[in-house]
Amino acid sequence: MCGIAGSINFQLDIPRLTQDLFHRGPDEQNTFTENNLILHHHRLSILDISGGHQPMNYGHYTIIFNGEIYNHKKVRQKYGLNCQSNSDTETILKAYEKLGPKCLNDFDGMFAFCIYDRMKQQLFLARDRAGKKPLYYYLNNDQFVFCSELKALRSQLPLQINEDHIAQYVRMGYFYKAATPYKNVCELQAGTYAYVTLKDCKIEISKWWDIHSIYQVQSKDSFEDASQKVDAMLHEAVKNRVESSDLEVGSFLSGGIDSGLVTAIAKQYNASLKTFTVSFDGEYDEAPLAKLVAEKYKTEHFEIKIGFDNLVNDVEKILSNYGEPFFDSSAIPSYYVSQAAKKHLTVILNGDGGDEMFGGYRRYVPFAKYDFFKTGKLTRCAAKLFHSLLPVSNNKKSKYNYAYRLIDLAGKDKLNIYLSSTIDSFEGYEKYLLGGDDYLAQVKMDFEIINQSNLSGLQKIMNLDFDNILAGNLLVKMDIATMAHSLEGRSALLCKDILEYVPTIDDSFKIRGTQTKFILRKLAEKYLPAELINQPKRGFEIPLKKWIDGRLKEMIAGYLFSNQAYSSTYVDKKFITDLWDRKIKVGDEKRAKMLWTLFALEIWYKNVYSTTNKF
Image (cartoon, rainbow, N blue to C red; front, side, top):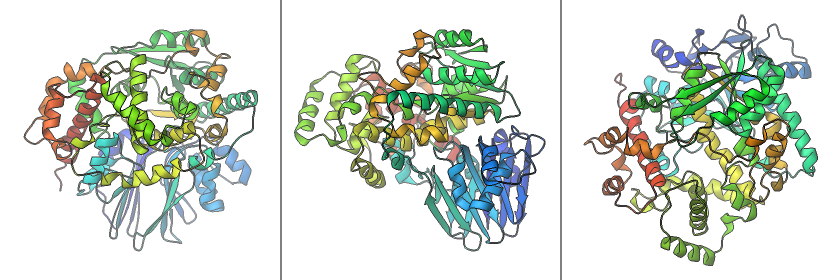
């Protein structure tokens, strides 16, 4: 795992870059320069520690690489690549020489890399299928700069705010696909590659992988055959992620089946497996369930008790790490857990992607029975009227809240249904957002492509979640949280085989009746204690409502109601005041999400955007 950066026709401030990216690669830092090109690499040494130095040169190619290719030895064998080291970086380089961009189709891993071709005088940049490893770039006239983190990019350039993208963040809770908070700065999207010419910085971007095309394939496998295949894929994925490291590999272990399955299988390939569970003062403690798995497999188990005593002192630093306004409050415990795990090891397995791939969210259940995106006008009108008569819901885990949100969904139309079923922060209060909704134009166009396809309602929402929530929020959260502590997270449930098979299996293998993630739950019967198998999804149960009305109340008010408050540029100021004073008819959970969205925006504006003094 590493941090990378580079530029064409722009002089990077290497000392500042080293300072900003050091946490991503504390073991080694090297810079390559040639004519108008600079390539900079920070290394976190995990595989082929004595070799694998970067930038790596071969023939007329030079590469800088962030990530891991877990099947790189098989790629070598398949194509007869003659490599001198054990480094997956060398595998990428020689596979690209032989195959060009087609080499990406063979890679199982997480990656963001840049290859310089001095013969063609161009750069080749690429990202993995799910977008596990980040890559941002600035392009303005004849200057091109790229980097692993937005915050580091901001330190190098006099960036200006893209107000449409900030408005998009306020409404959606994350930045959509290539969007960032800055003008002339984009994120290279998951599953894409780009060529950039050194002469004039012309960029050509191509999509090399798209889960939408996978969803359009229908497998005829029986449930038994699918179960066996998923079991085998998990074994192969976990085995590769344990063995593709010269350092010890541990496992995050929650009370859920995703991390439980990963841990159970990992123990077969690491007899001295260390597992880590978080226990904190939220509304639910998953530590007792996790301990059952640890005891069953006799792992060296660490229960990390996290208090939020230092939250007031830490929250600004944690959210500022993202380099953009970041809505997801579970970034807080993710940071603390990663900090604690790093004290014991450098590589950790997790269960990321299990919900998006196998149908783990409760909101998927109604979509498995009915395509809400195709709801008729009469139904929408009736549901909207009925919903307006209901009392608001304040308990997100209650059956009433589930029914309340379901009726709310039925009263909405197309994209609004999706936004309400996921983040659901300012949905229903759009009239208080300033400046119209032109920022949603591309979002609506992309949504309609999926909505007008022949996918089922369940496939549509899962496809949308993979492209949006997973790529734009969840994977960003874990990358920054882990790498802030030089900890590498590995996601077996996002392996190549699962990504290219599970979307094709029958909907009923994922949602059966009201049971989510059915195929994994059945598989879990083979590996996990019975107490875990039918537990509902919880994740980090953040006491957000208590934070806003308690220990963070004074800080949040200080940001939102200061004379320099930035959020009133995008949200009606009186609405913010009335929301804070509880004069708006809204549930406590939704109120907390809206206020946290604006709080995160204010932290970014004050502590990231406004504090760079060199410009």
